[in-house]
Amino acid sequence: MMDTFIPEVGLVPRRTVSLPQSVDDLVHRVAEVGESYSAAVARLVEAGARATRTAARPRYVGSAANLGPRDFARHYERYVDEALAAVGKRRT
Image 1 (cartoon, rainbow, N blue to C red):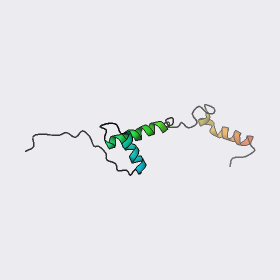
Image 2 (image 1 turned 90 degrees about the horizontal axis):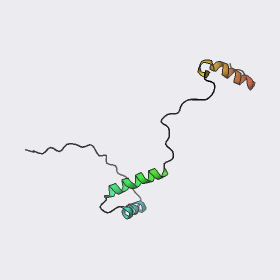
Image 3 (image 1 turned 135 degrees about the vertical axis):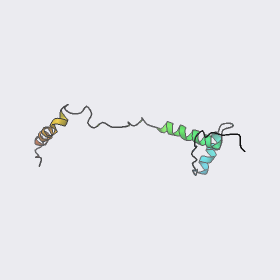
Image 4 (image 1 turned 45 degrees about the vertical axis):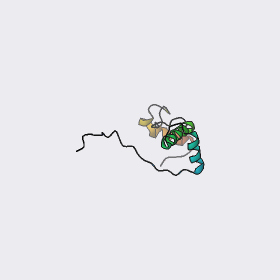
């Protein structure tokens, strides 16, 4: 009977990727002493992603936030009619 219980710390996803020989050579060249191949790849991918990342995209984009009159939502028909009249068109 087994007396030792090994708790599951969490699942570690395994991914398989194919790397060109030049990238594989780079991983071997820059891997730190005692670092596994997988850890070196993960570190390099993260460093590359951070280096090329632009400003973070917002989680949402407000629709017309702070644009136009404050009462636009209540009186949009009037504003649209005025705008169309200014360019010589009628709304049907």
